Length: 93
Image (cartoon, rainbow, N blue to C red; front, side, top):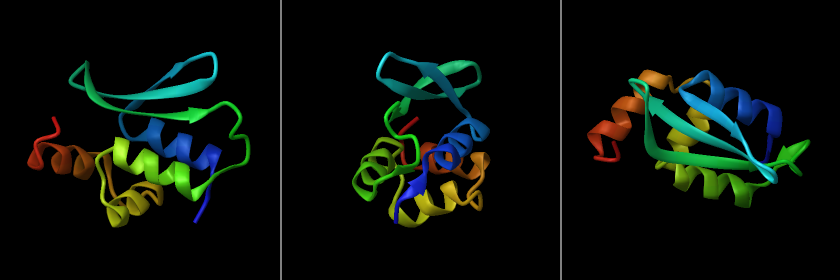
């Protein structure tokens, strides 16, 4: 199920990710207590309308989320706090 680029970028920025604009991509890095973690993802500047399923799968893997939690994250039913706890519990941060 593809998703609107602006919705994905909004979800990332509202839940702890910081945008760093690159030449070809928007890079999103998760910061925790003011420090950059190793969790990051990117969105192509060419993705003006929708992000395809294949790219969403790559983003999900980069964010270390199972499919269900990734969809909840993007639907804003999985909070930033839940995401951070998930990453800590699973040893990603």
